[in-house]
Amino acid sequence: VNSGTTALFYEWAAADSHVAAVSDNRPAGVDTVEADAQRFFCHNNKGMLLPGESKAMVFGFLSTTPGAYSQAWTIETTPKATVSDSKGALVPSLLTLRGLSKLSDNAQHLRNMVADSVSAVTSETLSKENRELIIKNI
Image 1 (spheres, one colour):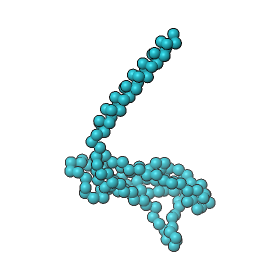
Image 2: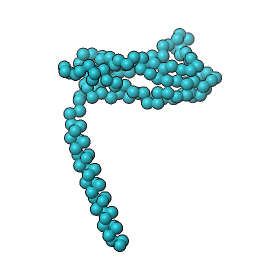
Image 3: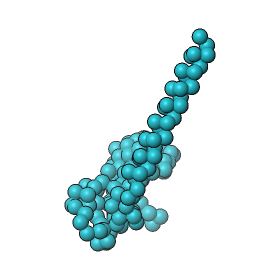
Image 4: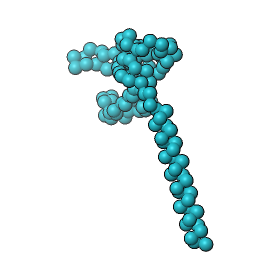
């Protein structure tokens, strides 16, 4: 909640570009490029809060490689805002996200083939119906 008297402009950003593996449970053979892929995302990472306004922030996790991952995110505000707990102590504006990917998707190519087939049949059926309608109205 923006408990101040001025609008706050905010931006969420990853504290670093590295996504840490929480544990060494990734399968052997995963290359370092895949291991360091961006897995956490902030939807609407920039915005503005008016005085008295609050917004829910939505973060997402997506991984094609099994494993447990974490990444720290920070929020920057203009003007600079401080967050304090109920006792008045300053709280760091750091959020640690954690995600777990249990299985890799080995059947995606099969689903793509079915989707392509359904799309082709649907297009062919619509085309045939349109031809029949045009011929009927001649």
